Image (cartoon, rainbow, N blue to C red; front, side, top):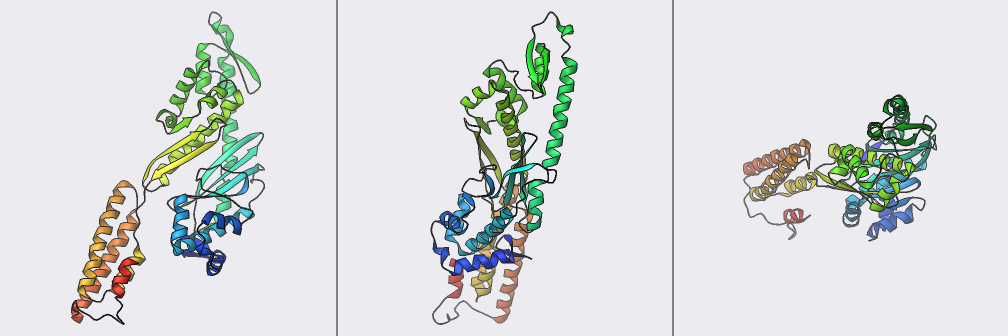
Length: 387
């Protein structure tokens, strides 16, 4: 059964484990990443939230700001300790093959800067590697395995169909007798040798056929036309890797796959990352891809304001909280306009304002003034303002 801790839904076993390790004093460990590595010796923890980083199925990427939250806030430490426990357990039960028989090469989980959970996998079928990235529902742990591997068969089938269509089109357009007086370029695709005129070569490039670029300028112009993320500067590619890809058909295919993945990640982030402001994706000279996502999120601390209202003993105390709530409302409304939060956050603030107004009415009826004595010399309202 799933239980909610902070903003995460975790299993009861995960919550019990997280409480246990914190009761043992491990929550005071300043190096959270090292502490996690010691608890889960068979899990590879990294601070990168880029997908496809690591080997095997035991990879967990955690955003640096989440690690800082775990170090500084015991409640956040409990929340993410429990979520990580569930991720580790899911990784231990990862299958070795997808439903259609593809070998699972690697997979992992990602805890993003906004606290959301993602997953990625790499499978191999027929000599082709298939990369897949997805967003996971923290509440529904049972769906994780299916989501991580659900698109593998569909992607592989679609690519094979595309390759078949490309081959048939190129065979049709490769009738050299039509172009006997034109300069002919020779390429090879899908083990079928063909000849192309200049027009045929352009068609080949449009169909993503490798090995048809005469120089770097022509290659880059093609990438600019086909991949918006390259043209607008979201993706940067090592010059050395570009030179290598120009002269190596297999490397070109790898690059095209990486850029397809980059386009998907940008589109997915635009849809799902709150306050999305942009991405930077870098492909190094070995074909490794690193990503950084920029954005912001606005959240309403509902529990804190509720404690402050409950601790208020005078009308003046409630007025102080009302001032804070008005600031919260302005922040959330601005966040809603910029995409940094959703309507639920605004609704939460408005509901809390209604509670504060109700509390103020109650105090007015009770006739409470501004000079109540503090219990045992302790100002509990002031304490709750600071907490």
